[in-house]
Image (cartoon, rainbow, N blue to C red; front, side, top):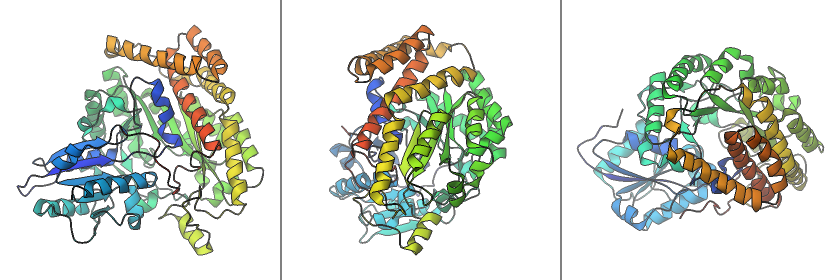
Length: 528
């Protein structure tokens, strides 16, 4: 489905802002790859680019890859921007540069939908998802591309059904330069975790695409050159369990047809461990990673944040169950909760040790607008408006003590020896449960062999020779080489290097203590 045209033709420049360096963008792994420069293709802007009237021209720039040029601004008649809270500084910078060319700038996406007051400089604010507000914006621009005298706020009241979404314009993105591919099956989550803004932004009744749409999008990604891991960016892959079960047989059939050239990953609640029928089909569809918001191993804290569903199965048992289907668990962890105690960091480190989860995003609690947490803390007078802090929450424990506890947890959890021990566990006890199939002919090309050799060269030189933890690396690497597991060596080393490097920067105060912090730092991922 595309928006209707009134016969006019416009030139739209879609610009995605740089990410401020964060735990989850993996930028420290990029130098070990064969040219990766960004995390994932942005779904929102590429969807919008595909939705524009067919008569309209569109260009797309991801400033994680390169900076928008003077010629591109001169070409455009309007600029569209989208992003998250962590990209706030960079979104405002894009607006400033576009205004130098007297271009109208429209902003959409999750950050402006939650906090339109963050963005007074933009000409148009698109609050909400693709829908009637989108059509209103396009109608305005079809009539007049001059900047309005005052800001115009357009709010979606009637959303476009996801079954009518076009295939995102992946062809506009250089997908080979991304660490992961991205795809979306559903939107919304039935749970109401206190800290989460998803229900407030997208609703509790997950909306879904058809399985046929997903297969078409995977085919398009493949046509554009994506052969690595594709991440389902759904808020909760099993938010609608029936829909997940309906999709999985289609994914299995597609993987068999294409020779399993893509690995899949997703985000889901930990209670997926109680659904072996879903896990079995995910294993057959070649899902290799599930991000679970475990948040904390403390049952009292889970109950306080309204995340009781994490206790439907003992947490460690749930992790082991998921592992038994060949899927690595990645976990979100929150510190600074009201239930935290002086010994919380040690309890967390004990959990890390026992769970053997290699990658945990350990964040300080951040209150986001449109969440029950924000509403509660606002009533209690515990929201702190200070962009110099790592959190906007007035913790019950002293702020400096909480930050020090977080730094201690990061420092210990991501000591090189401990990171590689956890990856060794995955290699020995998790990855062997994955599907075993011959390398598809599509991957037996000189270009793919060269790609692997480039990554091995970068790893051996940057980590094995120049790295200050090279002894730990070689102990792991030689074991992988003896087993002929070059894929495991490359994959684990890339992630481990990012974790170790980022954790060192974080504990020295050079990184934010929350992926969602409003603390404004200069984006450290360069746009060239």
